[in-house]
Length: 323
Image (cartoon, rainbow, N blue to C red):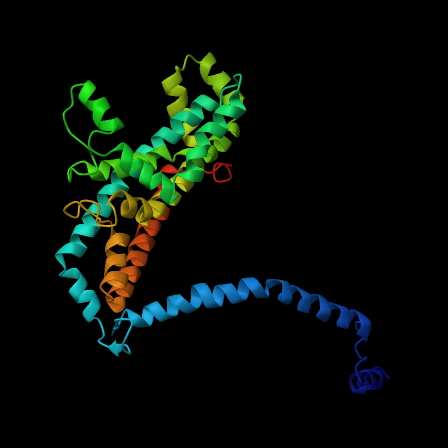
């Protein structure tokens, strides 16, 4: 009897899976219409990305391996542009000038931004006015008109020349001096410290006041509190600013082009990388060589970014990681 029941159970067909009611046709149609509406709203951005970003990048990558002068059809030459670039003395000069600008200008700009942010983080009368006043140069500093003003300030017998002569420094105008003109560009970028200052200020507002009170009770002075509390707590913000300003410094063009009166001189003293790229691509019509330079700049910025991300493990402290 037991065997017959077992056989009957084995031979009986399995229960059919429970059928779930499908989505109504109206709901599916409404979902498709919503997706279509979303793609329609995104279409200007998608078209702009494909036509103005992805397309030109793909074209420049192809031109980097060709001999292209904007007038004739490009001819494939392989890595000749890159090898010729490495042997070009002016290309080497542009790398040197750009590296010097980045190494000097970026730290000075961040130091000034952090110093002013520390002052503005304290409650005082007219705080909103001071924040707006210090941030204003970041809004107008990149304009061509400011470049002309800067060149006028640092020319011979101008305001800076007269001030330093009054103080006993007979250097002359910075714009016409190959040894000093790059420092006028550094001064211009340092003057635009408003954007990193605002980011530093936001980070300082997030530091718990209890930490400062406990450190003050333990007898820690202002410098000790800054070194042991402020810097570790704002290290993620500091890393963000270092990364952003370093990348921005590599892309300098407008100020160098305007201050040097479109010559990137004197004596190639302001020949930053993008200025030489512009000369090769649009003045000498060597678009293939200029495209190769652009991709070398992209690789250099990517390498610096990777190094910065690798180094953050040693000096950036995230609150989640310490828990």
